[in-house]
Length: 319
Image (cartoon, one colour):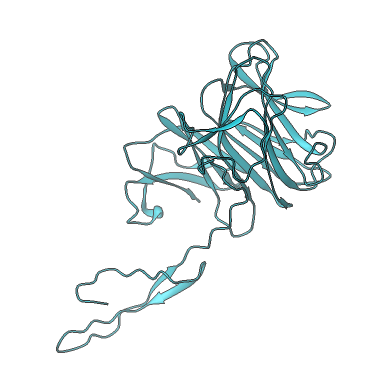
């Protein structure tokens, strides 16, 4: 290294390894002894994304299968520069299939939905299927309705009949965070649902039969009110794997933000923040008093966290 160098970036290291460094200095007259050893662990390589173009940032439906009634819009996107926009159409479905997953998996996204109108009218439908049933059959099928025409969305899941699992969980026209975690497959399969911070754990409602794996996400605007729309953005699927870091999803909530992350029962979590990345997140200050958050199986969500300026970085620390 050259004179007066005070930092060094070693950019060719393999992931998830610990490496040791010692320093010695020289000048025109003498050389120093070597320093003590400093250890640094490189980050694990991030897995390839399971879904393609989940934020629709290509400006089109690359990676997706669509019918009529689906477009990519840059007008008031929910995140980034584009969102998917769906209008009512019997022929439309926005879906993406991927390599079947047989481990626990979490799907998350942001959406807005229009009020469906009359009491009991349905709005957006979302379906999670296995590889044997991409045209129907074994699936988790949920929908958003306004059962009592009070202006709040009720989440229902189909199991021969529609079952209400999260009443008044959605404010129509407002961005809402969503996550579904499939805990297991086959006999005894369960999943957890988190819609806008409203949580239902250990659900076992399935249409036709339980999932043997997880292979497709599909959206349908089944709204009965003419001219209604919904948007969806930041669609992702994360598969559980020993040793992978947990995943944090940040969703806009008015002028604030909602945070959802994969978590474990028996752990606690702190939300920390900094205005720069020059120090480790373990040294960052707790933000907005969000400390000692009790871990729950599959996922945790905190809502209405202030952003605090034009540039700020966040991390969730597991204890």
